[in-house]
Length: 274
Image (tube, rainbow, N blue to C red):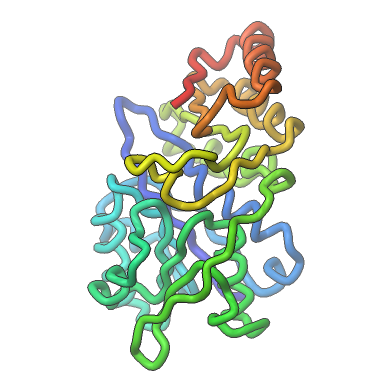
């Protein structure tokens, strides 16, 4: 089986750190499918922002490494990717996340990157895995860019999927090993919860307005289970990552549920709407 690594380097502040929600959602989506499970082995999610050389020691025989890139980790990711490419030249390096520009500059300026992913990552990364396993050519995977005969090439854009029934990384167990790691016993973990995704507005200063993602609900069942997972695991701080929390009438029910969890578990101490 081919080894897959997902990396979302995150800063630890005052002994607290966010669980790597973005790569967790990608893992939960992809590994629900039998063909992915049969062809690929998901390795531990990597999210601690250690020295790149040290983190490199945690990676063994990678087939593909996916990076989730933001303004606070893009330079780190580029450095780690260069080290990976030097040590494992046949490894496929894929970059996604809000920090990836829509043009092809990340490919033209960074030879260590093989693939770019635009927009939401779950379906796109799953398509890449299937293409690299021979199910289809890379050119058939929407919302990516890659090199063909040495020249950067972008595939067609496609709208993001309906996230209503996307599986949860929390209840799917994708963070269990992190919580059980004895090296992290004194760390306070923060969680990110989505109740919807996308935005109906087109504000130029906001990444939501720039990605043409329609507003879509996540199932209430998953929302409540994610919130209860956070409370049951004594997560003090839970951030709601919706661009427009409060836009749906059901959001009042969600707030009532957070209050009920606080009364039952004593957590979260803070539920913040960004």
